[in-house]
Amino acid sequence: MKSRLEKENAALPPDVRKGSAFPAATVSVQQQDYASLPALEAEPLRSSGMTMTERQSLSAHRAAKPLGVCERACKGTRFHNWGAILLIASAWSASFAQHASNSPHVFLLNAQKLAETKQRIQSGDKSFALPLTKLESDAAKALEQEPVSVVTKQPTPPSGDKHDYTSQAPYFWADPQKPNGLPYIRRDGERNPEINKITDHHTLDQMEAAVRTLSLAYYFRGNEEYAAKATQLLRAWFLDPATRMNPNLEYAQFIPGVNTGRGIGLIETRGLADVVDAIGLLAGSKAWKATDQKGLEDWFSKFLQWMLESRNGREENAAKNNHGTFYDVQATSFALFLGKKDLAKQIVETAKQKRIAMQIEPDGRQPLELTRTKAWGYSNGNLDGLMLLARLAENLEVDLWNYQTKDGSSIRRALEYLYPFAVGDQKWTYQQLGGFDGRALFPLVRRAAAHYQDEKFKADQSRVPKLDPSDREHLLTAD
Image 1: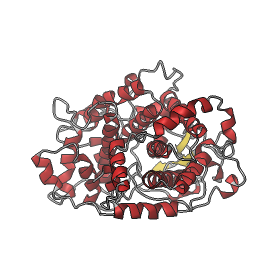
Image 2: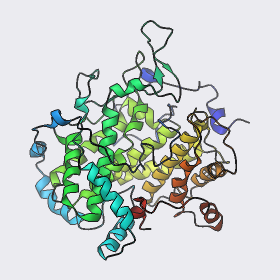
Image 3: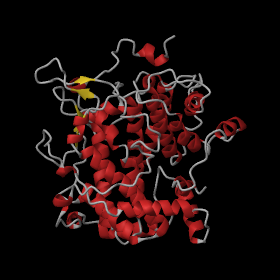
Image 4: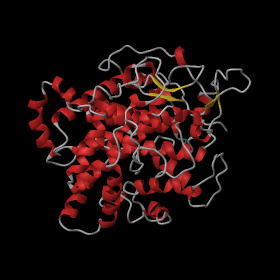
């Protein structure tokens, strides 16, 4: 029997790409009705057989290793020069400092739990000694990270401006039947090492991981050295005229011989939601100035506008699989950061039907993720995104954790569908290149435990191994 989604898309080929046929949007952010955007399928996110804590995602807990790829580009630059144009920053700084003295301005992270952990640490509670030691060890490595930038990549994007982020589609390879290999052809789940010639994606991951680690270490320990390094990395990526990234993804995940960029490329910036929280953790430090805050708000405002109005942004918003999920995660996070609560609430309310109802079957299957060559990885990855969206919705008093369609589709049902495979009660029969690893689901079960506290879920959770005592998640949950 075909699923609802399979019936609806029966006329569509497995991999639909509208490309240049998808019209660009010129309507303003204020006028655009988010819920009215057209539907379009897109290729799911990059995934692997690795566990959730290993893959490069919003929930990754990796500290950046030093690269120094921006050393020459950043040498001698004055990261504060751009601030001269921000004429209202000094008037705003007083309110910024007042806010910073209260709980951290974060959205994916739980501000109340962070504040509780910090208070307990300051009162001498030794319960967090192991995760604190590990966090500071990671932060020490991140202190060695040189500023990184999009301008250090070798290839120049079609715009001629190296400030434009650029990346190549990972699952496309040269056609052996063509003399020049063009156009490239798809080999789902097989990553082409050729993509590593363009370094923007890698350096973005490095910046995100380092900034997240350093900001958390600063928040809990108050060491200004951590805040200063995080601020340096953020200024290099977002603010300094010599090294900053332009706030768009026009040239992300291009396919040689086919196009110069796709909406699908937005999956590569999903870690920026972590950066938004890192900014909130740096508030009140000596290094993080009001001009820095205002500059990042300006950057994210322009990036969010591009997401809402551009062809690539609209294409990704309309994606019915994990790409659409992580589009919503980013758009909601950025809208909250910018104080656009009406927009953020519209996104998460719309997600009830547009994401949960459309992506999850009543039995918990996620059909569009199960068609992939790494079906376990994609099913976990999309559920991860839906849980992140549910966490963001909490800031808006919208409950996605317990939302359920009339026929039973829900986040919990998707988790329950995957659970028997994770603990070995059932054998995974869908394709999973690289091998099956049930442990990928365990972080999601632990995350959901705060929201599903009935006896059945507690029994299921009891079969999931306890979190490593040194894992920083203990700091984030005050557990």
